[in-house]
Length: 303
Image 1: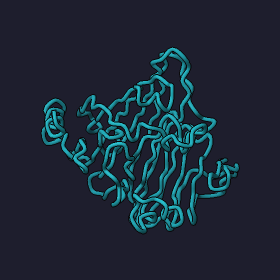
Image 2: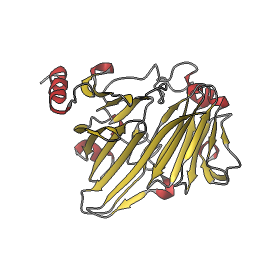
Image 3: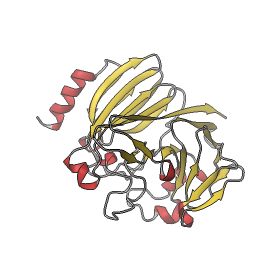
Image 4: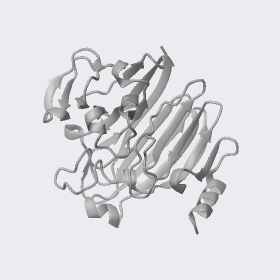
């Protein structure tokens, strides 16, 4: 069965007329496209990656690079990549893929359901010979994304093996901004964080986060919500979380952006990654058969 036939079969099985369809996206990759009265959205089976969410009466909320590479085995630059089972580089293997392997892995489409909150799309992946080349864990990972007035993501991991499973995870959300240099991030005042641009030294946030240079911070013990205010788009983007104890804030700035071949010129000014996560000391350990669920809810209001 070729790719076109596969997409057609998935649409026949899962599509909801005038609400959700499975179709070819960039690079002929299969995607789910949402069109409802509440929002428009897109989610690729490649990495189970949400690449677009546009609530009614507002513009696109997620940033997507104009130079994203749409091909198997390559991460999509933008949207909401899933980082698992490690974050950043793998500590004991510099050759392992950054942020783990599930963001470049084809996932399976499990469900598309209309709910009171919007259109819920479920995708899943499991450990196999390919993943166990990099990491011995045995797992099942499910992402449920509900596209509505809010965007709700739930990442569920089950330890399907016979030994304990320890992993890091993040929903690496690229928030679309008019100009990062004018944006403020509220909700992290007095929080301790590790600054990855300064040898992961522990520091304390004073006031709002205002980004004026390369930023790669892991804020610790942060179960509560945070909020980006973007004066040029006249909106606030709020992230609320569940079962997430770290919040990562990242932007490569001009210097770091120059090393990213899949980021367009000057596009570093148009996003900030603010991420529900469990990394470093907040890594999750599951006993055999145990499940962990992390949630992120993104909402938008006018300034």
